[in-house]
Image (cartoon, rainbow, N blue to C red):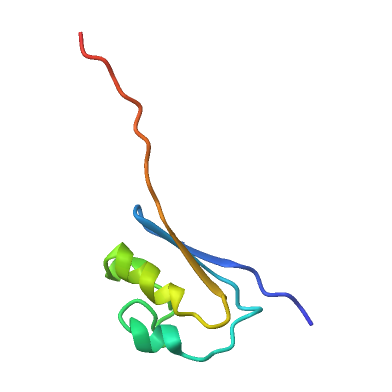
Length: 82
C-alpha cells in the first residue's frame, strides 16, 4: 500500500495538517465546521474561512487524530527608533 503524503493548510494565524493514512472518514470535521471542511471543493480544507479558534476546536474533535492544528504566533523583531 502506498503511503499518502501529509497535507498542510496554513493561514497567517493557524496551521492545519491532515494525515490521510489514518483518517477514519467519520465526517466529524465536515459536520462541525462545513465552511472550512468541504470535500466537494478541490481544496477541501480552507482554514481561512473561519476564526482560527473555531478551526482548532473543530480539529480537536477528530476521532482518529488525522487532523492536527496549531495557532501560529509571530515574533516581531523590535526596532529602536532614533
